[in-house]
Length: 242
Image 1 (tube, rainbow, N blue to C red):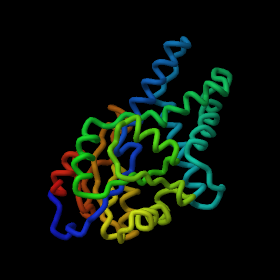
Image 2: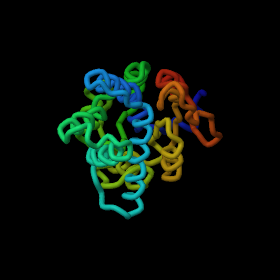
Image 3: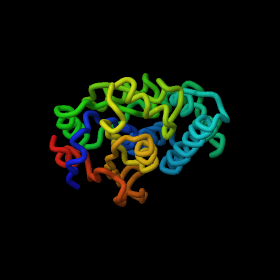
Image 4: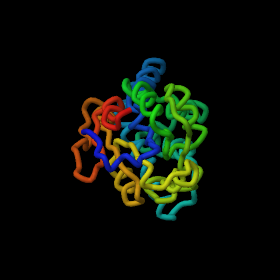
């Protein structure tokens, strides 16, 4: 969808990363296949990965609501991995060191095929930055591993909170130096864009129909309140004239 003239004031783009810029599903399943092969196991890593994400999101929501103190995302994933293995009767299968290694998968995500080209084009016209719930250490690792060309790396860790809390979007204003209406949040998650829009930012929805694997059906339908609806980052660059 082509951008309207009202978006001429946009100076910066901030990006969700896990799911939007990078694929976490295939790396998780690939890791699981390797573990199954090396250990002679038959674990359904598709089910485990979905449960792991659900446990992680529940902890984030508890932190946002003040029911738990702030905790960095890599520690949340490690904590919820223990709970996940307990839930599936696999606690005796993996040592603490092996669990630490499994948890590193969140630092080794793959860029979507269009991400690098689209980001490179967008970066020529706009200031580009991550705005992720992941911790700084993890986000730097993801950006380097996936080769994502950003101008800046911002994460919720800097605000000691998590999206969709307004404090995370305020980071972009404070640290990039633009007004909310001059910043466009780019994500494949509608909750993220709803919160960014309520904060005063512009919004671009990018479809990632394979975010949760080939059998999942994520909500990728257009919404009238999106400023831009794009099928991928190259399409987004075209829409924004980059």
